[in-house]
Amino acid sequence: MNKKMKSILADIEAKTVAARAAQDAGDMDTVKAILAEIDEAKADYATEERLFELEKSAVKVPAASEQKKADGFQVIAKLLRRGKLNDAEKSLLYGDDGETSPTANDENMLVPEDVRTAINELRRSYVSAKDIVTVIPTESLTGSFVFEAGTPAGLVEFDDGGVIDLTNEPSFEKVSWTVKFYGKLIKVGNILKGAERGGLMAYINKWFVKNAIISENAKIFAALKAGQTPVDLKDWDDLKTSINTDLDPSCLIGGEIVTNQTGFNFLDEAVDGLGRPILNPDPANATRKMFNGLPIKVFADAQLANVNGAAPIFYGNMKSGAYFIEKDGLEFAVSEHAEFKNNMTCLRVIEGFDVIQADSAAYKYGLLDVATE
Image 1 (cartoon, rainbow, N blue to C red):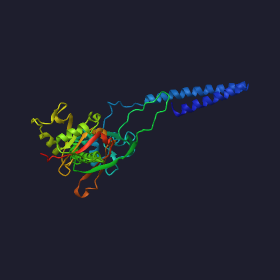
Image 2: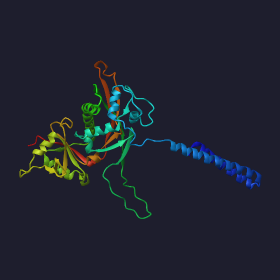
Image 3: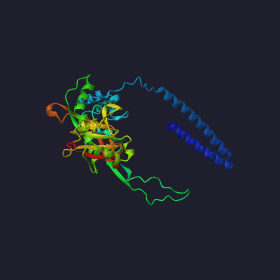
Image 4: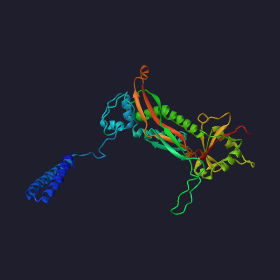
């Protein structure tokens, strides 16, 4: 229904009310005149409705198979070459209703979906701490979560129709988050036509993905350490005792151990009183080992550094312990001015995130004395 059809219907409704009022007043001549106007309006509506349907059927929308899908890698490469984009290419950056023509030196644009997918696939070849915490995508820049403080006391018993006793009502704490943006300038040389995918991904891998993983890991480990008093672990026996006694058994469901190369090597070389290795193969992943029923994830010493000669180690359920708040989508911009003197173009890629500690009781942070004999 178009605007004119709606107007005609409103007119018919108003005339109907007027005809009823005239009838109630006994003015039949007016009633007949208004009914004649209503019949004429109905005829106008029928005509307009038919024209509207004919106009709709005359508009042919290309089938999905007929539409040429733009390639995100070619779009970015074309921007780096200061090329002009067609409508399909613009839609990758601005949506189907894009009104501006992006060129080099424009403000941030969204990284096309196929490029983001390739970047996410590439990320899987690196050890990312995002895998050990809960990742929450968001379109907002700020927000908060409310967590119950202390040990949950369970439900309160009350009689039907009675008052729920809130004397021992649990306390809650509000944890706010604010997305911060992190980026990297990628110095790009000439990208050969027809080799955009391989050429761009080589640059993105070298300059952005590796550095993004390092920054994300550092923020995640800092959040996991925040407010935690490190458990002094003299040997693997202390680690086992702490797992068994310091953690709620529910935290071991979905739990794991996270340490660095030094800590893993210490555990991997350790044996029990009968000379048997204390680590067992992980039946779910042949490339990992387990300790006390928990799989071990290993990070480089450079990313999870030793503390005064002791190896840092997290154990328990870190997915409940920290949230990685991730801004949806990556952004990029291009400029020929930043590296003008070197005859190069810069591609700036940006991501936004924040990391907050959630349930600090769901895991423990310890320092393993790797020098203990």
